Length: 326
Image 1 (cartoon, rainbow, N blue to C red):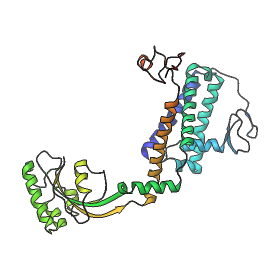
Image 2: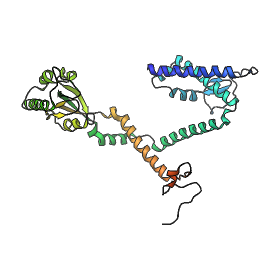
Image 3: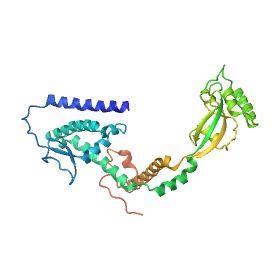
Image 4: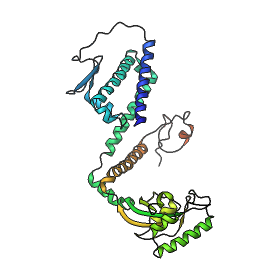
């Protein structure tokens, strides 16, 4: 939140600095006659749109204002939606509009650099809208089908562990010097045998585990999803059945003994948005692959010598024709 506020303040100061610089360089012009709020000049809004403000007679519609609001940092949007924030955002829009109008008066849109940047902005906007149109919204039926498909990966296993520190590991022992790796493994094997024979896992964790953060809670790690542990530990822990104690498993942190609790599945509603994002990402990648493969691309061999030298469609120099030979 503080970072976003700082960004907004920096932007405001930057705009203010630009305005100050322009004011210092700009020659004196005759005073411009003010335009009544009811007069429509400059860019025209769409039919039946609500005009919420004007800058030098140029109307700003509610749609345009709300579009600006959506570009603000998410944490700031609730503030900008309030009456006080809306007015503050309007003040910043006045600065931007005044600068834009000054740029148009100076004919800056005809300069090569401005044209290039405006064209790239249009390209980005059109590409984003096209991709959104191609992908579309994911319906509830498809989301539930994806949920059932991904259900094994959405399960979480309640885990507890006991950690035995070893010399060179990432976790220090609770007392004394760390054991050599072989001695630490021997200790872990002894503990594992006792626990599998009916020993109290939680009590042993409180007394023996070198992971002091979890030892006080009987070694409880909480609900752990597949893939969230280091691979060498994930392969051991996630195969356990409820109540089962594992053989010792070594990681960079120490030697672990796990005990599995109950398995739970993440409810559909909690992963719905993530599933939709996954589907949309896959479909977007497929759409991009399809479009780029079918695109006719011609490279300037002087600017792209390696790309132009490659065979196959899409790598032809300008003016060349594809071969018709089979």
